[in-house]
Image 1 (cartoon, rainbow, N blue to C red):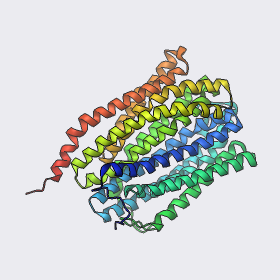
Image 2: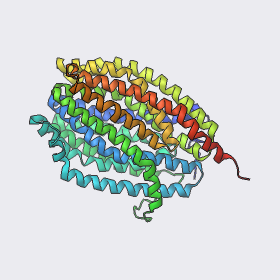
Image 3: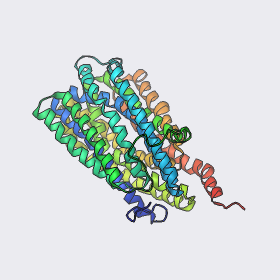
Image 4: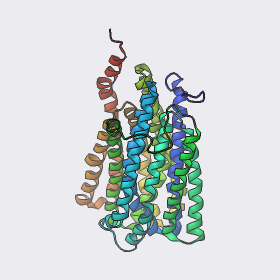
Length: 461
């Protein structure tokens, strides 16, 4: 049943709803990215090799984590659409089956991590201390992934109802805990990179317990029994969830895999460049991350109105989102240029070589914030309209048509550009991706989606 405090996504004024839905997601994304920034900050106390080690293996974890996160993100739209249809029993069934999928996936990833994590790192072409530290870190951090996936289930169920504030509270608590544990293990116990890994693992376990407890303290628009095996697995519903979620899983995991491939190329320019690439990406996430939160925050708003067949409202949401994301992109570009110098000095620990690489990379990627913000806006609209395959297609073009071939072209054909080949490719791939997404928004959506909504809204005679 709907509570009085719940947001009315079907009838409330659109601009306040966009702000109420996206602001908590943007803040929680910023806090979550600050969580990774803290890891990088404490790694900087250990040295450049430790920074490079954390940076080198993180995309591998992100790739595996994204397999589950994509499914849960797809579940937001599916469950929100059922709520918009006022079919709460259907929403409950989807929630139950989504939990089954993620729990199975979490178990599989745990086994794979225990067996293959070291072998995967060894074949990436690194050696010496960088290899040793990367293996030490990854053996422990691998086990954070199952807990991260389990907590994402309940975060998804909050989001599908427009309940975003709880996730902000949750991420704030875990950020504080992770910072304290990092200080304890690294600065007090002197456990080195192993301490960073243990801090992350303990934080993820605590986060899972917190979000689980918070979920069952709330009243929701649909039921989800606390007992895991309260219902049988239902293959038709699982198929629907996978149909929406797998494109996002493939999209998000491919993006993380792309960063892993980038690391392999970047590592050939020396650990200073790897460290600079990691530091630059951590600085960028202060605005790139919230832009992703903006896109994800609009998914339940679009999806519930899709379930309600409200075309005019969906169009207004889309137009306002595009305007706000463009403004945020401009603000983010200037914001990145302002925060880059002090954060660069702090994380680089006055290593002049690393500082120069960070400065060159971040200055260029600051302007890529504008197209990135627009792309995230378009992705939120596409996912809310249940067209997750469209998001996947655009991401695949970005990675496999633009980014990886571009980096390889600079490396093998234009080697004189050195690491700048990576920087230029990252920048232009963001620009072309945004142009592609906008073309889909203005051409594909009006022709193939809006007419179907209008037709479904006409009562049969």
